[in-house]
Amino acid sequence: MLKRAGDEWNKINGVLTMPERFNISYSKSEVKNFLHTDFTSYCSSMNIPFYSFRENMKDPIIIDQIKSWEPDLIIAVGWYHMIPKCIRTIPKYGVIGMHASFLPNYRGGAPLVWAIINGEKEVGISLFYIEKGVDTGDIVEQSKTTVNLNDTIKTVYEKIETLGKELLIKNVPLILKGVSKRKQQNYLQTKIWPQRSPKDGIIDWSCHSLEIYNYIRAQTKPYPGAFSFYKGEKLIVWEAKLYDFYNSQVNKGGIILDIIDNEIVSGILISTNNQDTPLLVTQVNYEEKDYKAVEFSKRYRVKIGECLE
Image: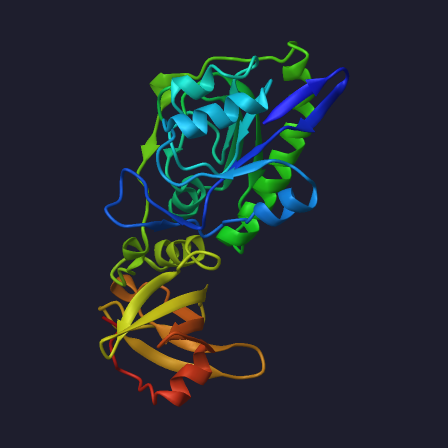
């Protein structure tokens, strides 16, 4: 919550934060914010008032708390909940938010995860005025960055975070002076993607190797990870590589073709769709412990010809 004081635009009057696990309308159980940051210690050390939000943004206590801070502008970042009109109308300059896509494309949940899964070569971030709908509202400014083949969700987030900081530093002073630009989204180009949960991470080994590779790197740390099953137990795949040096004659996906361990590369080679390029799995988690794939294969006596479920 920002309050303008003369030419000082970055006076923070209050912070509304939330715990790492919280309830939300689209889930029957608590959801976890895997990118959660605890602001309470920072706010305490900087003498910034804060309030920990739990569930209902229409709670009169929350509304009265925000009103008491008398914000000129509210900035919502990493916020999962719809912000009601009774809050959006409190600040003079409204509520702005950050969404990790080039709106109106990839509206909705987990935009960067979906973008990597879909093999996008470019992703964006949008600074926009929050309105009633999901990621609707006029655009203040947008930025784009590339997604390289060796990027993961972690490295893409780092790129996007840098762009987001630049957008805020540039545009917040203009908004508080009443001179910022804004343009309407082209809703005819809208593409909305659903929220994801850990159960959505199961690997389909019948897909092509590039599709599986994208699927794995999109959900690796800090997210829960794409996974399969080995001998009935969950096997999380943190890292895999496309492996062009093996001529597979296996038509079924998920078969362990080889265990490679040399000075150049090491891992478990897994078949994919119809003799497509296999994947070399290099980092895994099994029975809640991380392993290099070769170490995992030795510890659990993995055999060539076994199948991941």
